[in-house]
Image 1 (cartoon, rainbow, N blue to C red):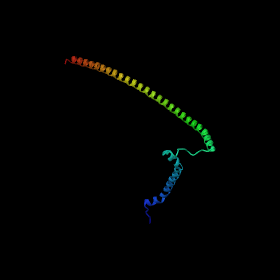
Image 2 (cartoon, rainbow, N blue to C red):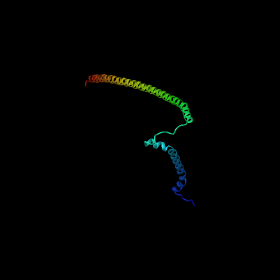
Image 3 (tube, rainbow, N blue to C red):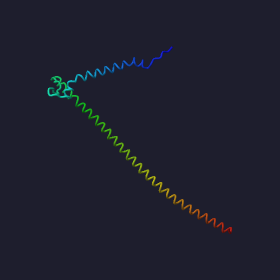
Image 4 (tube, rainbow, N blue to C red):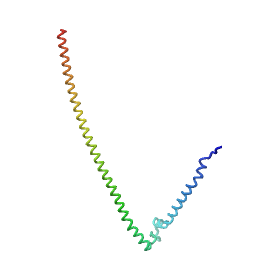
Length: 154
């Protein structure tokens, strides 16, 4: 016989895992933020007795930081500059391609308008020619009918 379990029962057992991970993440964040609590509160709520200063750096820490800044910032700046130049070149090429496509589309539009105007002119000429042919044919048939009537003495 199969047992039926409620969905709540299955989530309750598996729910403790994600809840524990979530609680651990919150606790880690709180520990990180508490480490800087004095500095943040001193800078946000200054009082005459407390100045907004950072902990003093030792000479070793200071030189290490300076070395890291000197070595990493130009490299990062150069990398960022190269990335931005590449992006700029890509955008310039894309704009140039779009301009070419736009010009091609405009040329195509002009060519189609000329072709359409020529078709209208041809249609107009054919209508005039058709009317003339129809008039001549009607005159010819009228003459033939008149000749037939004269011949038959109608």
